[in-house]
Image (cartoon, rainbow, N blue to C red; front, side):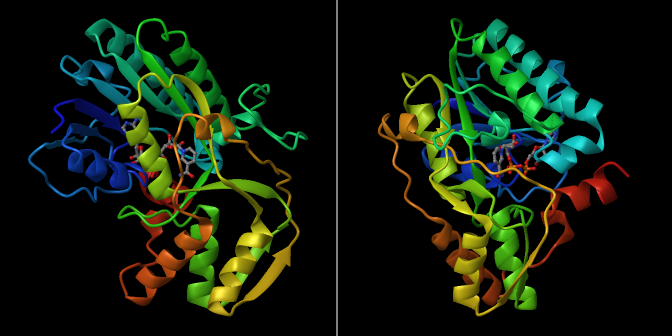
Length: 315
Ligand SMILES: NC(=O)c1ccc[n+]([C@@H]2O[C@H](COP(=O)([O-])OP(=O)(O)OC[C@H]3O[C@@H](n4cnc5c(N)ncnc54)[C@H](O)[C@@H]3O)[C@@H](O)[C@H]2O)c1
């Protein structure tokens, strides 16, 4: 058994709700910090402490016996980041700096950060590797870039591992239906019709089981330091819609889009560490369909970050 103590911020979110049970299964002790904007779906466990706290109140976060921090808390997508840019910067950048500073002073040896593949902005290069310049467009991407740089400045004092994930897909007890694969699958299930804006934009994807396995892999492999892209299927939104339509026999409607972002990321550097993804976009679609048809997945407003933040969190 493993006796490490891991502090996960944003632990009640989409990723955290899959990650925390995996950490507990491996025998880690976990402290889960989250404001619980979208509720808390974590089940009680003898090695889990759930604290409804704000990462901005760093004086209130105890790091004295923490071995690893996995920092997931943020205002977690472009449109939400634009709702209140000051709040976005305070949560997604300033709090990261304060947490890193306190971590160093408390002797935390290991910091894992969920950045985003969107920090590159729009690139013409076919292969977007970690060496390319960062040209973030939105407040969301800018806070990720700044947080990365702050954390890298602590790389001599602790293990710093930064992940730039693609858009995540698949099931979680705290579901997100605003991420592309999940959203298109849900549209087909509910309406037998999928509306695609533009459709030709290529985006990278990663299954939620793989991104959470990656955080476990990083906990176990502190020698893997630095920045890593994490996205394994670079496919167009239209490709995703077609995969869904084939499975669910639905109509695809393509409408013009004013979102030109088309990018692919190359994750060879991560693959070279020995990490292997196990799941695909097709798996995510199948799993969502199965869950919905079993009556276990509902179109809850809470699963749409923008709508929920506008109507409930920032009202
Ligand atoms: N889901 C994706 O496709 C994706 C892709 C790339 C990167 N990421 C990043 O991974 C992380 C987790 O994403 P997610 O999809 O689980 O998002 P999520 O919105 O489901 O979870 C974020 C969690 O952070 C919490 N939170 C927000 N502000 C907080 C604060 N001040 N103090 C404490 N908790 C706070 C929220 O309550 C929420 O539970 C985020 O940083 C996100 O930017 C996600």
